[in-house]
Figure (cartoon, rainbow, N blue to C red):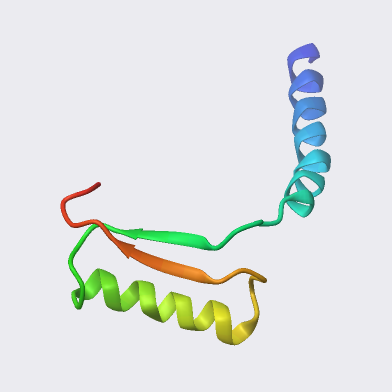
Length: 73
């Protein structure tokens, strides 16, 4: 029973503190997408689709910049 109370108390503490921690963070410079493939491929198209959606819907106050680094992972 003591284990269950400790587990529930820990879960409650995490649940209460998580929204506060995420609400404080804001990007201060442009957000960089690292794309591990060359320009024009499927990964590039998906990254540019996400970039367009983020900017169109106003989900971030900072621009998202795709950066190509072929061979990285």
